[in-house]
Image (cartoon, rainbow, N blue to C red; front, side, top):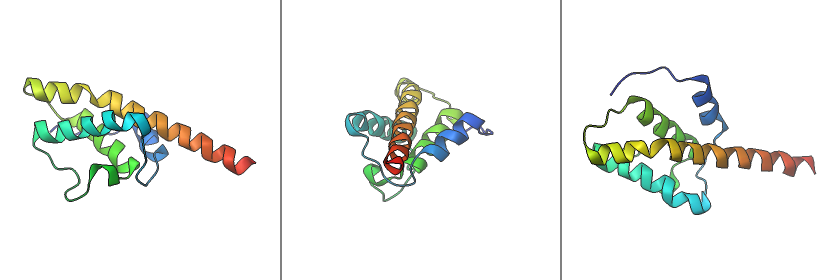
Length: 109
């Protein structure tokens, strides 16, 4: 794994994500399958003993970003899983932004 310094946009995505598990709705299958595929293809276990659906969104997006910036795919399975990381990261960020906006509207009423 490479080392890296997080970019401001990455820090903001992590901070925006809820620090609790989130129901990602229809996008959940894509996000969690990407996460599991990276774990499987790179022989990683990011959250031992914790079901993927129970991972707080903030921890999940942070882990996906770290993988995106540090992993170096060596075979086709790894390249496929790695290539899906940006989409999963963006989906979590989009859902986090929506939840943030919704929370702001709920308190404004």
